[in-house]
Length: 276
Image (cartoon, rainbow, N blue to C red):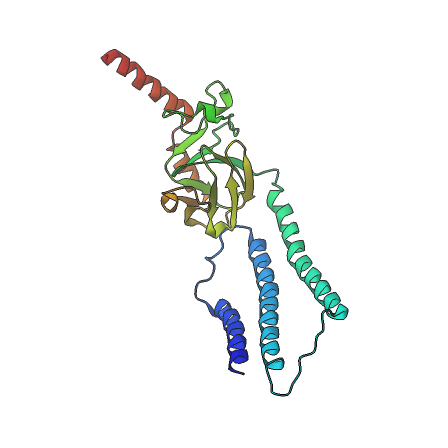
């Protein structure tokens, strides 16, 4: 009896701890409330299964405990029970999978009016690129990455000359406008994650992944790497600030373009050659 009671208390306590826990999600700041809803559905389904399994264990401990003069019955299979367990498992898995498929479809279906930005991950820093006045970003390739071109922009692509390059700084975004985030990595797997946005995606070397979201609340939020990427993984941080359109444009005008950074690099090279 004590063992059965302890098992039931563990099951009930685990569920109550999650429901009453003060360690809950941060307030959402994007359009992805669907992510929260899907997680809640998954929690209740898995929580119910967990409770049922532990309760069944408690029942078995109590019901089939050793008793003097009682002989155990050998029952190697129970087809009726197997059908119920198989059917219940199938319904539970479908209930978790179907909402996720709908959310995933929305997650990768980017609105036509979304603005493209780029995030570059490398050990252990973030780089960001925003389109310039022409609204288009130039091409990039890791073969172009250098100290003077940390994001690897193609210097021969005219569309990239006015791209805004932020290396090691913070990202700013306008409020209420959809953003398609293009993700690249220079070295190892990274993962661009802002908890308040509920959206993240692995950054795979040699490929470009993406997701989209719409910022719905102004403020400054922490950027984390959600993929173990080496010794200083925990220090790979930045910030993203969501602003009203006017404040965002004022900030954007103060940032340097790829052409300006390239010009400064050429000037430094010429000065160094002259000094030699």
